[in-house]
Length: 302
Image (cartoon, rainbow, N blue to C red; front, side):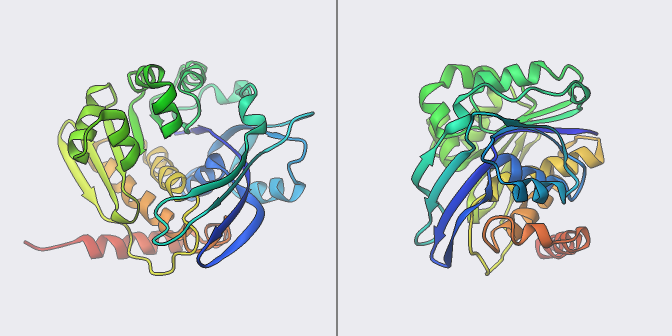
């Protein structure tokens, strides 16, 4: 099935205990598309400013990503983010941000993208998420992400969005913030009651929880020791998961579990270097081998 994503493209500067990078390619839509491109050809809808470097576009063109929806807007500047990680690197600290094009109108969906069957709504304004989804009438599977900003300031609109999508992918802090539940199973149950058919709660280095009406599934993180930069891990998780679901067509509890395995594996590759350095050089066979290794780790005879 065709996979459509909207989100941000950013120019990032990141510092971690393992080094730093300046003015590198980032953004939720970029990490999502790179991860999804191992399984399908994602369709990207996003806007950047006229300052967007040509070499960054070439990086995007090097992958199996449909860029017909990438708008380079004259007179605008690309979203920029500066951040750092300390200690266990579980939380990013924003040290500088220039929203630039993110506070302008959304990029238009090309007419040829309107038949997309799978839609991922990255963590943009909840009203914009619904407007975007309305433009894809043939959608069979819609999944949304969010962030603390919208939970704090646009709670009612966000709840409306959760009422019209099929799934939500959210991190543990946001799940607790939105539901006022400390226990993550209770938080996921509360989210499920808001309308989606499935909820995925990301727990960083502690893995993820999937909840459907059939009950919960808990998946650990892939045990990688070489963690250099967590930026984009959550978006890579979502990209791997939705890319796999778009490839497999059928969405069941079992396929969701398999999809989370793929998302976990691709995210584990992303964090092994800065920006896209690691994920851009990995082959599908390497991804599949790590999936096999991970499944082997998880298999326990009772």
